[in-house]
Amino acid sequence: MKRGRVRRGLVFLATLALCACATLPEGSVGPRGASPPPTTKPRAERPSYTLGERWIRSDGAYDLVRIEKDLYIFASASGREIHLTKDLAVARVQKGQSFMKFDPPPEFKWPLEVGKWGTSSLTWQHSWGPVLHGATFTWKVAAYEEVNTIAGKFMAFRIVQRMESMGGGRPDYMWKRELVTWYAPEARQLVKVEGDPWFQFLAFQVLSVDRPSAEPLAITLQAPKDR
Image (cartoon, rainbow, N blue to C red):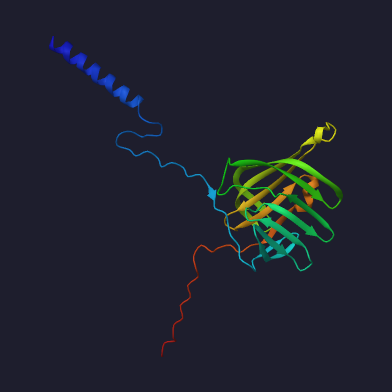
């Protein structure tokens, strides 16, 4: 009888142990181990700029010459201008007699995180066509990834921006356009822009940026020893 009771007791304890293991939270390594720390989601706060900042890009070197309401206005020595909202959305680009503008400019929501998105309505105008294009604008932070540029490699947020015509009741006047921008927190600026042929006017890559060094260089001067 005693052996039977002992055997039943052991079976009961084994059953309890199995139930306890089955109810451990996912990722746990047991009662004596610690759960792995949760992975942090990359995010970027919105940068702010001061007058005199310079961006050196494949389409020219631009200095921040004015800050007007919600716009940063960068200008080059050749007279080109780039108008960006403080959310870093393109409002207007002027290159000689050619221009492209968006009214109202798109709105991005900061901080940037993968998966964040938004939509709005705007008009799109360019100098090679007098027509105002009404469009639905949608943006999404598609990835945080390494991107190659002329200035080197950066970890950057890839923001996919799509415009789709409202149509105006005309099925024959339907179109879609796409523009992709990469924002690198390390560089505090857009480091690359590309898009379909209609948006090549806006395309560029950075040529040079000021990268923060890992550690400041320490230099110690010592007086020469007497011999």
